[in-house]
Length: 134
View (cartoon, rainbow, N blue to C red):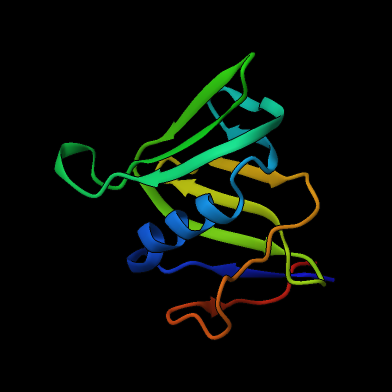
């Protein structure tokens, strides 16, 4: 059945740093949903390099997702992110990281490997579980 967990904004930087370390080289698929450009798949099965949150300056709040290997690299930037959700499977692994921006667009980062745990330490402070996904 799975569930959806919202990551509170004040924990984004720490969570992304931990997730980047834990999921390094994990194959991912990036999809973008946007009413102006429609739904698009940006990449498939490229290893995760990192997820970073800009915390200072005029670009504060932007999230950068980097993927790539020796043949291809891609950096996708989400300006003005407002919410981040984890879609977690029944085993507690991340199915999808969903990032919403202020223009009602979404970036979906699907983990396509052997499984990345949603949390790195049980009882991580600040996580709020929302209603289960249908």
